Image (tube, rainbow over all chains, first blue to last red; front, side, top):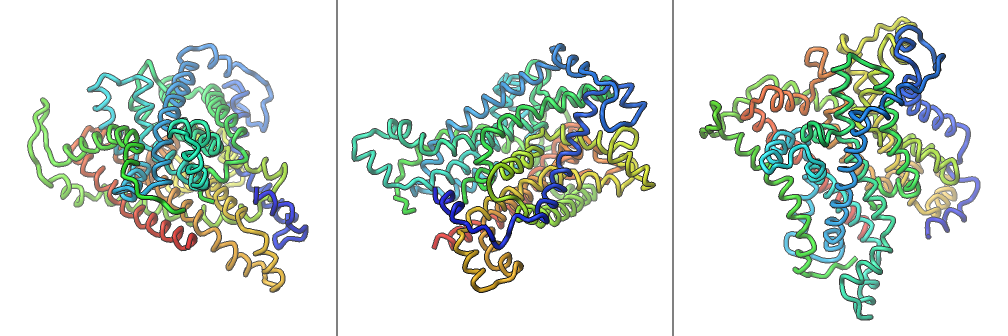
Amino acid sequence: MTLAATEISRPKSRVLPWVNGSAVVMTLYLVFLLLPIYWLLNMSLKTNTEILSTFSLWPQDLTFDNYRTILTDPSWYMGYVNSLIYVVINTVISISVALPAAYAFSRYHFMGDKHLFFWLLTNRMAPPAVFALPFFQLYSSVGLFDTHIAVALAHCLFNVPLAVWILEGFMRGVPKEIDETAYIDGYSFGRFFMKIFMPLIASGIGVAAFFCFMFSWVELLLSRTLTSVDAKSIAATMTRTVSASGMDWGVLAAAGVLTIVPGALVIYFVRNYIAKGFALGRV
Amino acid sequence: MEKTVNQKAWFLVLPVLVLVAFSAVIPLMTVVNYSVQDTFGNNEFYWAGLEWFSEMLDSERMWNALSRQLVFSAIILAIEVPLGIFVALNMPKKGFWASLCLVLMALPLLVPWNVVGTIWQIFGRVDIGLLGYTLDKIGIPYNYTQDFFAAWATVIIMDVWHWTSLVALLAYAGLQSIPDAYYQAAKIDQASRLAVFRFIELPKMQGVLMIAILLRFMDSFMIYTEPFVVTGGGPGNSTTFLSIDLVKMALGQFDLGPAAAFSIMYFLVILLISWVFYTVMTNLEKREGA
């Protein structure tokens, strides 16, 4: 609210006016970002013979065959389904355990709270490569290897700390008087949390869910190590098919384009909170 | 905010504790186990003490990977942080263009890491890639699978492409939180653009920039997928960073003992540096709050 108010009162001739110089910088930067993605899109709409024989900035012989291959072949499209399943499971688990913990960190002092918070963060810092082999053995021994839940649990390693961190930042912004008033009004903790508190930090929950989704969606090493057939992720499908079929560039590019779509969709919903979310709710 | 002391808050933290213990402590203990034991197969293990640690500390392979990793992290931080701040300063402040810039800039962050590799692999190839083809036509020899310099340049530019937006978005969030009164005061004092940046914007961005540096350091230090897809660690070992080397050792050659010792030292290095960042960061927050 305060932000919007200052936006309006901001004078036209600011110290940093949105002049042409800035527009040029932004255009150059965005071109740098989008050019490789454009090239991928371009490749995905060409036939393999065209990719290898001619060099052109746009498809001469427009074809959707690459996409058709992916969307009709179960070994391809099941990759997307598997990835989406474990990403959603992971997001749900991460947010539901992180909510109460973040509340505790933002409201109370308790024995060892600072150490615990840092210890949680160290898990975000742990290189997945360190955990790949032990995870493989752990989940094999409990019979969870090659299941969606295994990957979802493994991704909790870095998503739970992140969710706690983000949610704690957002919860800190909610005045404590609200809690106290609710308790005086006779709300129990559970009802207060569900009915009053969660709607107040809805944007924070959205942002945390977005980040869990994102980091689980983009991860390759753990999801590849923990799956073989039934729960094989799209990332793993892509790397394995590359070596097997001798570089089918068109299909590879089309698969790449399709992996960007879910991200682009969710980003649209949280666009106004992206910046604050990346600051982990601490602005 | 004033916090009250309440030991019952532990119950709220318990689910996280159980979950993270399952997915972090148990695996980590496995690693610690392997690091002090030796095996001759058949699941028979012998106490090896600190043998693996001393072996790894003497091995040139690890030191080489570590120095490559440090050089890589230093280079990308030196490029991404100033570039990110510069981009953030030039972003539109509000309205349609601001939203559009935000969405487009966040796009690379949401591309799966192996696809980032694929994108640059295709983009950089001399025969089919726009970048490789153009450089080749201009007459610059460029081949990221053969040439040491080209491989490094590709991996670094790829990381800049992938992650500069993160720094820019964080810096942008910091800039947005500066009250207008600060700028007006600066204007009355007729402060130069540089002075405004140095004495208003930079101090106000300090907090978020620390987060940016912390995140970028951590993530670049454990980079695996992107260089693995593009260069596979080559040519030779020139882009074999710590994680790539570790995976090669643990899952490729199944050298459990050395790999475990390697893992623990790797983790400790990250932990140590991150702890320094974290301490600085929380102190900054405290000072701002006071």
